[in-house]
Amino acid sequence: MTCARRRDAYGRWRIGGVELEFFLDFDFGTENLRALASKLRGYGNLATTTAIATPVLLRFASPGREATARRALEDALAQLDRPHLLPIATSTTDSRGHGHA
Image (tube, rainbow, N blue to C red; front, side, top):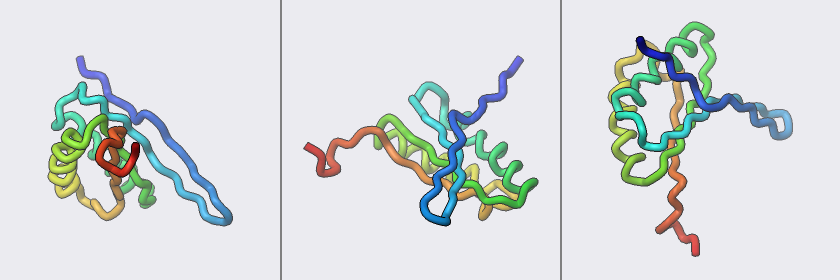
């Protein structure tokens, strides 16, 4: 039996007259990258069905994990019917080497 993994959060950011909705997913390195990348299919299906491009923000625990995951995500994104409807951004919680003391 498999259990469908859901997004960690859905958000809406509003400033002035501009509003941006997004999905947020935290990666703690506990699932393999194929499973992580396979989530894009669900996000892609939703975007195709609604014709609404909703960004997916992925937060990683380390720069190494982020770099490796980006390659897997790019491959998965290329397999979607309408990848232009699924903007993706990644970041890391590790701020070392980024000008922080």
